[in-house]
Structure formats: C-alpha cells, structure tokens
Image 1 (cartoon, rainbow, N blue to C red):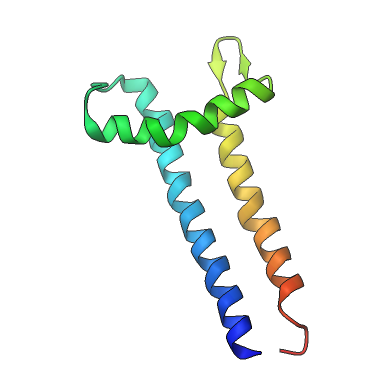
Image 2 (image 1 turned 30 degrees about the vertical axis):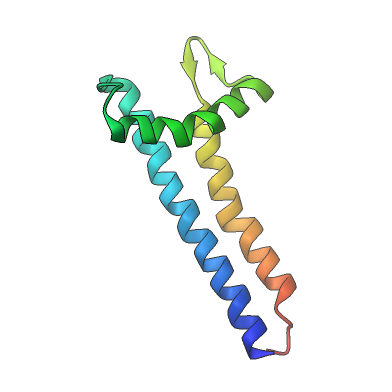
Length: 100
C-alpha cells in the first residue's frame, strides 16, 4: 500500500512541477509579444511552438480577444492554476486511501 501511495504522490508532484514550468513559459511568451523578439531565434521559436497550439485552441473555442487584446494567455494561466489547486489535490485525495 505504501508503494501505491508514493507513486500517486510522485505523479502528482511531477505533474504539478511540469504545470508550474509551463506557467512560466506562458508568462514569458506573453511578455515576448510586447518586445517583438527575433522570430528566427531558436529559443523564441521553441517557446512559441509549445505555447501557440494551446493559445490557438482557446482562441478557437472561446471568445478571448476583446478590443484587440488577446486574453488567451490569461485563460491558460487560470486553467493551470485551477488544475494545480483543485484537480490534482482532489484526484490525490480520491486515490489515496483515508487510512494511510
């Protein structure tokens, strides 16, 4: 039973860490729109390649552009926070037996 609990906690912490890392990448991507970096820079291309598909999905499914301002990074940040603060703890609480 201890191994099962440790595995669940490890997966939850890993997922939480990856979501935190992606949160920082989303913030960097949003800030980069203000300075217009060189689009041929490999770091810029990498950041855009991992954030734009998510932003595009939200742009297609939700009205996130108001008055010419794109709020899709903000929506992604809110979704990440929701997953980290509500979904992951709830799933961990459901999967780990109460007697442990």
